[in-house]
Image (cartoon, rainbow, N blue to C red; front, side, top):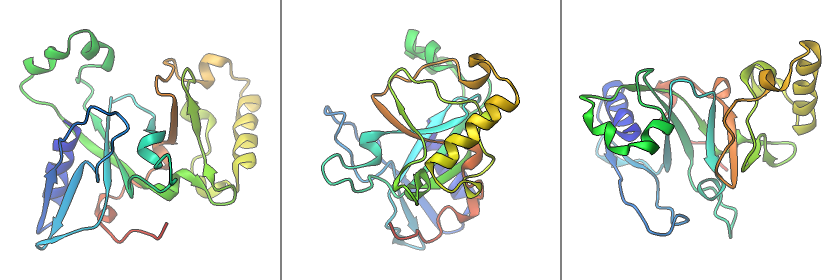
Length: 211
């Protein structure tokens, strides 16, 4: 569903662009192909690997599982850019869909929009050469209120931790005010808060920076 929303919005925003969707599935969950979509512009295939992430209206993070972020053997990036699609507020929640997956078939339409995107390198602290945010199974990500407004204001991972701790102390926040309610299921996720994403859709298909 997220890929279809992506296709419509990109083709509506860009002239001479066609988005080809890839719905191949593999028995091995670690088998990764060359991206969720293929972009054709002016008849040429753009050499981008895009990973489209769909999430609920209330999501605060773009999360990528480790095996979709790095090749576990070579540590090479699995995608060049990650795109976040948020579904509309009336979309069924993940818990509802797990209980009754076929309930989605009862809907006449599914609405949503691209709310931002990030390069692979945006997830990583240049000083530490490690992801800004790493979450393990059972972790609860931070709420937006304790995070810096932008990674441009943060020098390194220690600076980030100090900034988060400063906000927690300053506002005397309790655990429920610091962390989201639902723990993560994936073994390891790398993430970016949504307010750190690039929201300019008109730059999404621009040239990629070197890794």
